[in-house]
Image (cartoon, rainbow over all chains, first blue to last red; front, side):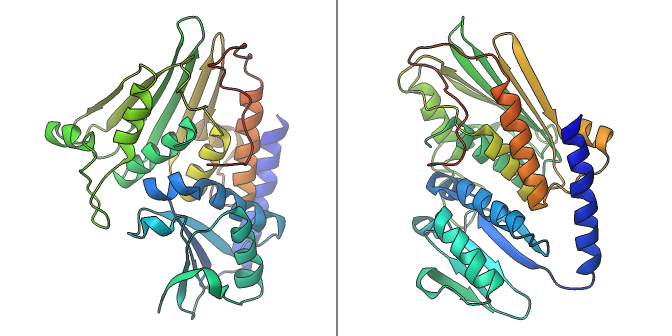
Length: 121
Length: 197
């Protein structure tokens, strides 16, 4: 089955990426996936982030989920955690904004100020 | 929720929060009988009778950030408006089974939506979870089972973005290969890729 062979390739690439970043603290992207987040579009935001990471071969980033953060009216919420930097939470994120966060914050290290709803050291 | 697939994602989040290690999603579209049934079974910590009653009340949750737990009541209301029902079976230490039925041809039934994206997001966000997704439409059926896939292909880094893309593509293709539902107001339609929520 061809698609299972693709998995083999994906596993090898992931293992190599793991070796490269060994000992480094990974960059984390956290998507809020409570009922409020899902209703507001968090699934599309998460699939878009995953697609962007795959397209850019950014393998040192882990994408995780959290539940409701208590900021339901600003969902979808996306938090970017880079080692040694304050965690930045963005609000009212859609697919297009998610792509800009990946390009601007993750790749170019520049916080997208206009959508920030919280920062935490 | 605009798609039933989003309800599925939401209910599975409950399973994850209940520390489930295994989740089974079953979708059954019975054209002749005119119903659509979604079952989500987990091996999480389960609930006692009182909690089972409470989770179906929109003003109860185990969460502390926001006081109302809306997931199950939203699903129940979506099911009821199509003439369907939601049942929750659970016991402490024995996991939980949520079953929702919908009137397949009912005008108020939300489309099934993008189940492939839902499955991909569940696995990407919970890479340690064993997930089995079975979908039956009429006489055709497919099963996507992470344990079975790993038995054949070896360990899979489910949280990896490339693996998420693989999951989404594989499930979408399997859904497209199911027999068509036929025409009518209740047609679940083709699986959407991307788009609204």
